[in-house]
Image (cartoon, rainbow, N blue to C red):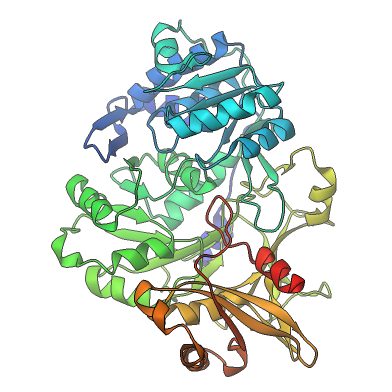
Length: 539
């Protein structure tokens, strides 16, 4: 670990483009090497070598260019897990356009907001009727939107046919002058847990920032076949299905499905001999409910997880069933992997691991001083000593917000954590979500993790509600399992409170419990605790 910490170094050329300098370089060096193995829930299958991806991305770049899409233009990709996502995003990199991956859950209102904020020139999307309908509904209100492109199977009137256009495209010629490494490359709209989505924009060094994600967290090599569970509309897709994996020469496995079924994922992993797997803890919770002995997972060698705190019981059950330790990591849309549990480390379930030496990480207390062992502080990235590869450029077109979160040589992540005697970091919660009760600072994640170990709880959200004596008290908003809903009442409230007292420090137990049918969430599935707090204030 010390060697990793002391000697990890990035040397970035003035001009860098992932599509040419990584993908096309692999196509020249190992043209027949498998790069992408795609299958879907209809048992269709496509295998792409690096040479195949060069050819297809060249043709796609020629097609986009023929539409007038050029350097700096904003292009939204709403492509689920369709294989055209990969050829399209590589093509946009080759042109120098800015790719904006987006979820298929966007409504017309969401699309209008994104077009207005980013001046989007083209939208490429799969031909699902609902998606086409939302884009059509938004289009009249989006004056910058020049092209609506469908990959099919439906290509309605007024839309351009992606497959036909690519098939008829001319030859693509690499530009004489590459983009600078500092030119914009990819942008994401955040999920909006506490307000309107922010535009997080990265430059062409961002793909290089994922080298450590793939090589030192996913533990990949040239013979790996890696599966990350993520829709292409979210940042986790390029964490686990694109940049780092192909930098190290691994093959990316994609299972394109409409409905998540744990058994189906496991069958695909068995059928195609997946060697490496990454998913949020929720996915592992579903998996351990299956009889894992029904599946031959002997090819699976390494598993990682991120997105929320990992429950110790989930870790243990998965380990007992597979012999594989779950290695946690942490990062944001604004970053690549900032903390991780690396292959040479002993994992501590629930811990994010240790700082990735790619970043200059510190914990800062509210008074601006460094947090010591066991003290809660905000995770910050120091930027005054060296360039942090993988860190975003800014919040696009919002210098005020950028200044609020990134000033005096520090980028403030908004996430709170503490570290233990071994230097392992433990997530506490978002700074806005921490509850201050009777002098204690209580992070929602720890209480939520404790509640989730009770069999009655399917989902929960911890918030603070005002209290005249304690300042705030802990409230749990809980979705119960079907078989428990008839028991919702005072007896179950007391049972859950006692359960939390047993699982964590007694002062953290929820003094208020509300049972609900569903939790308010963003389109990415993240819980909007701010909405719960607002409703409580209105009562």
